[in-house]
Length: 177
Image 1: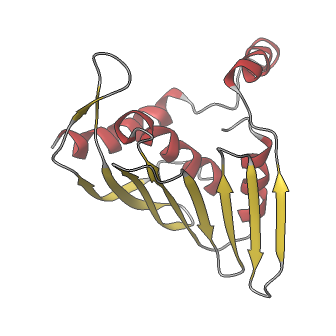
Image 2: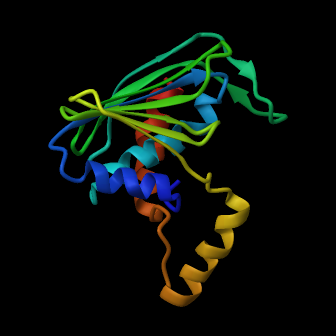
């Protein structure tokens, strides 16, 4: 997602927002395996350059199920916290067929992102609506960009190891409990 034009545009759009909320929800998308990617995109769009991501609450269903990946387990529930100017985030995965959706709310607008159909919508406080379709960023297409960045610039736009490790620890510690 850090290489996706959509998320780079969202980061620029939210640069001037003093505060915003982000709510990510859907059914059976894999909270245990994929929550870390949601935490990373929250960090990315806030533009926070230090370890400002904090999980305040985690409500996990007691039912642990087999993952679609053999040998792995999955859970359902909700994770909430804050990160930089994102004063509140919730990441929820339900044991249902709810579609995966991302909602970002600022004092000036509400943004709806449906990655399944590559749709972006901005609803302004004046009632104006801007809808855009965007091209999804597939890993198979991004690998070349990432490798070129590493070879040509000796770095890439992915999270640095230290930052990713801090997200993992922030998430894994309460998950284990």
